[in-house]
Length: 274
Image (cartoon, rainbow, N blue to C red; front, side, top):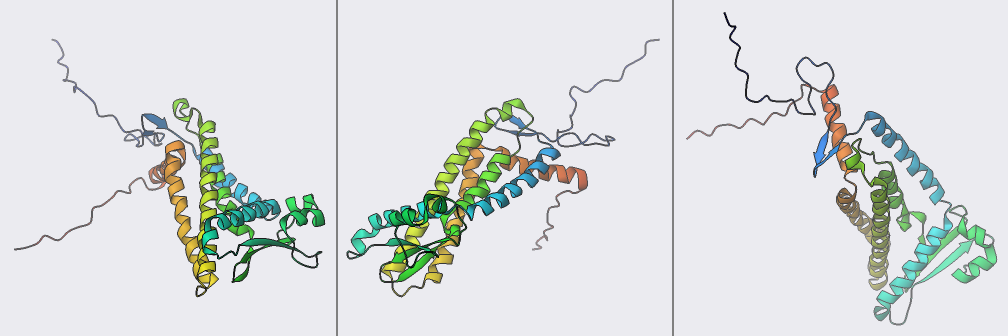
């Protein structure tokens, strides 16, 4: 007598890559597909990113406090450009920049600074060794400090870009270092230009409106200009999607491993009775 076989289904429902099959003690690796490419990371990569990026930021923050040349270059470019932009509104007056060194009896100008303190001291010295001041027409002086250069934001994004994890899939990670270098250059350029424009606005308002106090515009405009970081992240996603996708990957992995039964519940709504 011939044994009758049970009919097989025409197709079977496969478990998604981010879930574990019933009875499987370990979840399958998370793979995120974006624009036809597969992105897969590891906890080791995420740990390296979480540790190396902050160390990079702390180290270069400390070095930045000794990079006197950054304040000299950014300050000189700010004053030169703002005089060009606001010249018609200053009635013949100009912004200027002066330097103060403890060993000198008075303020000095840019060319004389090298002659009096030496190139090495201007290039790399403690932040308090060479003080920089902006002379505002009709308003006195404002000290120009390292934080005003905008290089802190550049350092943060440099750490993010350099240590962003690479996908295990060769097709997705193809050309990633070329993309990282490109993202580093254009993000740094945007931060630099926006920071110069921010100082134009602050110094211009302060010089042209005697009723305005410096603290009233300094902190508010500086805070408002921070929105550029969000724009950089959005633009960076086009060049380096691994950054955002790796964060999404981490969230999925945490949910799978530590909260496997966590599910979204829609809020209850009361039925309206007529």
